[in-house]
Amino acid sequence: IMLNFFRGISVLMIPVTINFSTAVLTYWTINNSISLAQTVAFRNPSIKKALDIWEPPKPVPGAAPANNKGIIESIQEAVGTASKKDDSADRIERMKSHNTAIDQKKQMIQITKQKSNAGRKRRKAMKKK
Image (cartoon, rainbow, N blue to C red; front, side):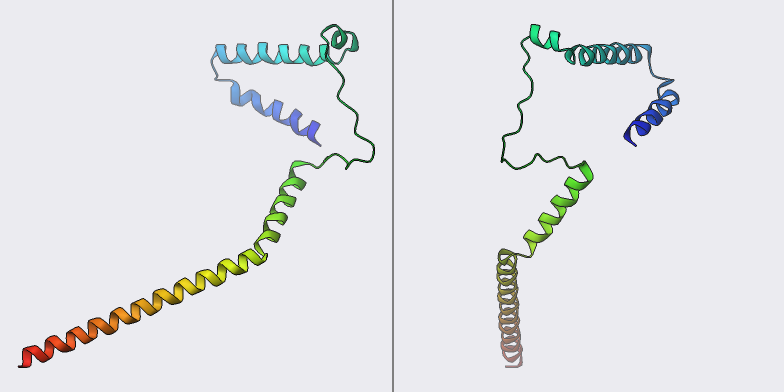
């Protein structure tokens, strides 16, 4: 599937890049040619040996298997892990703390209103005298 996707993208890039400057297209062509040559060269065991490039280490027996998930599976796992963390006791404690703070603000507002109403009543009483 990915191979066909990249083939399709390469065909779609022709009309997109048709109006690019020659310098950009020259840079891309040379850069991609060098990258292709490097990839082909480093697959050759004699070149790897001459440049002292070692083989990747083999997995340790008994160790956990390597994570060979694709990008979609990794994102889904991360989202699932994040949603599980939100259901933890810490979240419940934060909610209780938040609700307590809201209740305290409401009480302060009520006290402030009561004081301002009492002040109004005193001022009205003073005006009547």
